[in-house]
Amino acid sequence: MVANMVAEAAATPFDLRGKSVYVAGHRGMVGGALVRRLRKEGVEAVTAARSELDLTDQAAVNRWFAANRPQVVFLAAAKVGGIHANNTLRGEFIYENLIVAANVIHAAHVNGAEKLLFLGSSCIYPRLAAQPLREDSLLTGPLEPTNEPYAIAKIAGIKMAEAYRSQYGSDFISVMPTNLYGPGDNYHPEYSHVVAALIRRFHEAKLAGAPEVVVWGTGTPRREFLYVDDMADACVHLMKTYSGADLINIGTGEDISIAEFATVVAATVGYDGRIVYDTSKPDGTPRKLLDVGRLAALGWRASTPLAEGMKLAYQAFLERGE
Ligand code: GDP
Image 1 (spheres, rainbow, N blue to C red):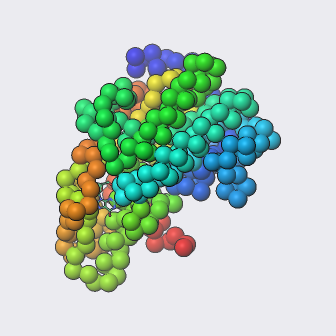
Image 2: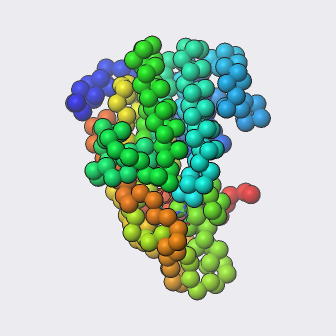
């Protein structure tokens, strides 16, 4: 199947230059990286500020698409957050992610977009699926409960892109990124993902001369971390070279335990105190390493090693304006 996919990709090169390319969610970490990456491609992405276009408003989305008629859509708009946000803001996560996906995918179809890339997430795979997670493990078992509402909304988006491809012949593709980090991340102390949370916590502990830093959970879960500019590069690569109903995982193919990762953060920030664990906080899914075989067969590999990406992410944290 991988060989067929490569042949299909080679037969359908898709040129972005000269096209009107809409990045939905350009203020987010991934959308921002996509806008940066598209510039290198000679493409100035079309964006719409939240005050100009509320993606949860179906009539507004339909009007905006009819007026702007983007030829290419990167759907990177989503309500995202770390394990605590996913677990507690469950209603907001399912509602906003469902409605944004439904509104944008449908409007892209109605207004004749040539191609759309939908961003899912590795949390769509069953909690206990075989590792590394293959794309075909989707819907083979129960989801991780802490992020089930988010995952269900993302699965709905994937299935919508797939259904529009099958009924209308729309060239809509879906990609599943692993845990992402980098410039533009959200450093909220409770609602952020682990990378941003620990960069901030270790940095503040260093400044305060604190003897210890608290890391949530047991430290045993394993996660795979991809630098967001690599993610944007993979998305542009797939937009140009891949067309198919099959999902494509985007990751590095390597994971690390949260405990090991905490030592990477400490080294990056220059903190040498103790690391302690708050086991009253959830671990979430034990492991979610992506199988990146399809992506590799399509000619893409991650290029930013974790230690280097973390230096860049810490720099971006220090330079962020708040
Ligand atoms: P997940 O990959 O969807 O579980 O999202 P997160 O990035 O929020 O969490 C990844 C792992 O890091 C989980 O096992 C968390 O318990 C752990 N973790 C450790 N410390 C923190 C923290 O301060 N914030 C978050 N969000 N996660 C943490």
